[in-house]
Image (tube, rainbow, N blue to C red):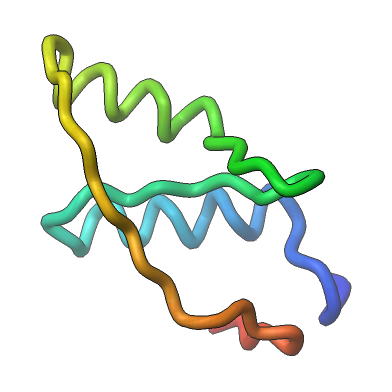
Length: 71
């Protein structure tokens, strides 16, 4: 694994662990060209858990870490 960039497989594995151990909604994706792009699995999970929802939300994250640490 490149220490400066997580592979899609790394993100998928991390997401699986978090989905199994957290009670909240896990959003995974990336910011590309200034726009948020949610992963397909995230979109499927939202559709499954909130099929008829019309909700707004606020998400806050710590600043992007330029030197991410992998577990």
